[in-house]
Image (cartoon, rainbow, N blue to C red; front, top):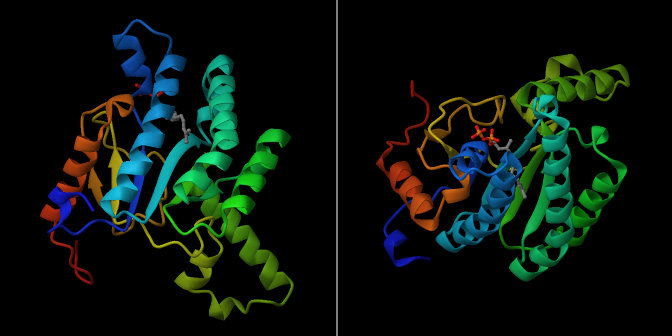
Length: 240
Ligand code: FPP
């Protein structure tokens, strides 16, 4: 664990909205796609640093259900980035002992991407290092809707009694089933919105909104986020 963290509470699970790629590129006179590419490099660096700091789970918002409405060229480029990342992640996951899981509605993705996701999840399922969740074609409302459909189906099949539906049952049908809720949510670039990310899971998370654009997000920014988390009084049960 890094020296500067030795007396600190490290969030077990950090969720990140990686915002500001477009502005990072614009500031440099580059196409938006260059910003996403640079953002992809930051992903690798921050996952390594987070694990080194003692974080156990990282969940990244890579592509939302709303992102399909971006220009086709940008959507295609983001899908290519994810394709490449998933191809590399077979090696990366092994190198970093990282367990990768994709959340979101993968049924709408290209078949080759679905295959890569399945391969990566299968190949990394017994790794014991960082647990990395990548949200692709993910929306919190969509996730909850899909969970409700699964529950309704199980009610119809007689597997669940409606009287037994409680928060645990709902959580077990979300894409994040089995994962702890995020302790800290970071959104870079100064925007202060949840944008349909982990709506259910962030009910009690701390929120941190640094001005840094995602491609510039560094180890220092990550440690500042953990510092911020340490300034919060994490009380449970009351009004927070
Ligand atoms: C938001 O910035 C960012 C995205 C919509 C894409 C995030 C994706 C990556 C960082 C690519 C790689 C991901 C992985 C897991 C390899 P924006 O384009 O909305 O920025 P702007 O608000 O400045 O325009």
